[in-house]
Length: 205
Image 1 (cartoon, one colour):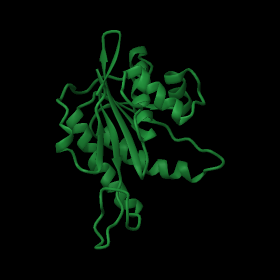
Image 2 (image 1 turned 60 degrees about the vertical axis):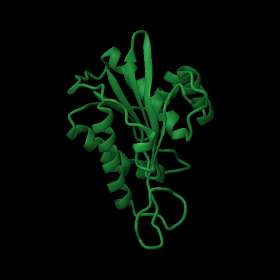
Image 3 (image 1 turned 180 degrees about the vertical axis):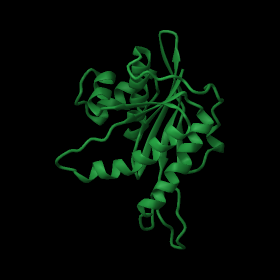
């Protein structure tokens, strides 16, 4: 069983791919899709440095393209994604997250994959035992669980790994009735061959 965890966003979308192992789980690959800004000549750049922000529609096109690329390469049997949440101090966050989630959910369903939508508090409690853990606590919990030399950065990557882990727990419990629709096990591509705007971090380095 291979599951891809996604922490959606329109600037940075974190992802983490886990494979079920006897008595636990192994980290296959994790990283962040960084959605670009415009350069002076109007082209959309991969990085976030310099230029004016790309439009929402342009970022959604980038996200759709790169996420579908991840699905084709990593070949998960299911995807776990954080559900929409709204905070009274940051009401726009839910709107921005909703844009990204719509693109991701469509791609998952069109690929015929299993889907888990997980609440933020559930994810934090699953990883740390505390439903209101800070980003730093989540990063450290992920580092310790998977024996990483450093905590995953940016925090979106750690969150995505935690989302995948929580989704894998759900799968084992059969809570969502996910039926794998295609085999996983595709070999991970090396860092050097990935698009420049997708930063990859391999576990247990």
